[in-house]
Image 1 (spheres, one colour):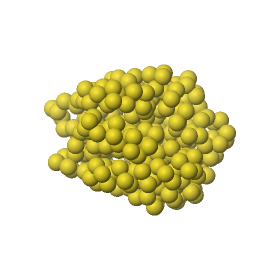
Image 2 (cartoon, rainbow, N blue to C red):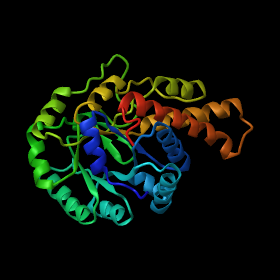
Image 3 (cartoon, rainbow, N blue to C red):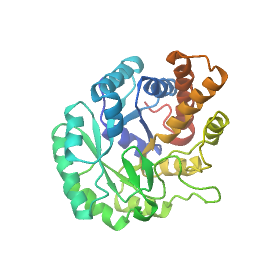
Length: 311
């Protein structure tokens, strides 16, 4: 089975009231953990690559690893560029075999965002590739994305129909209260997603797939393990999983997960070295890291996304 487009995935997800997990990948163990979990749960997948991941692991290596995962699992898997910020980057990924790209023009004016997004859409659609755009800006830090709280902004529902019509995008990332990175909310703060904005967007764009970025939940057990084994992570609160499940039952068809993967992997490695400081074989500490990722992804597929059994 070759790589697939996200378009059919999203049509099924919208009608079925679930979301597809879009998991960021950086190396072989992460890809194996994610895809092994999805195979056991018979779930469709989006594996996404940031510009930082391409620089770290090399475009060709990542594409071949994803192709190997398809061969091993037989699952429908889309390969997506996360937070492409230039036409040139999106074009490189399209030419290099990706089936979906995101062009993030949210840091531009509304008019310039439309122009840049339209440029990518025209090239992508001519090559059979789907495009995700973004309106609104999420706060937080993750890879090349760095937006301060003062520069963050919710998506304006009055702009979404014009944006989609003028750009021709296939899905739209919106800002309703999620944020990038592991440090989303301080203890005492109450996380709250703006479901009123999501409902209004859904009215303006009936049947259109919506995307949530910055949707990791910062699972406390992983933070506790990291800190118990020499880590220095401050207390933080992520997005409650019941809120994400509610969003997935509405117009949200794609939910991005990255920080939780990093926390699960780091927790396993720190715990391993605390227990076995004499080990130096990467297989010895990457095996439990891969197992942690698999456990985490299975939980997300079943309890948050609701896409198990939908492949």
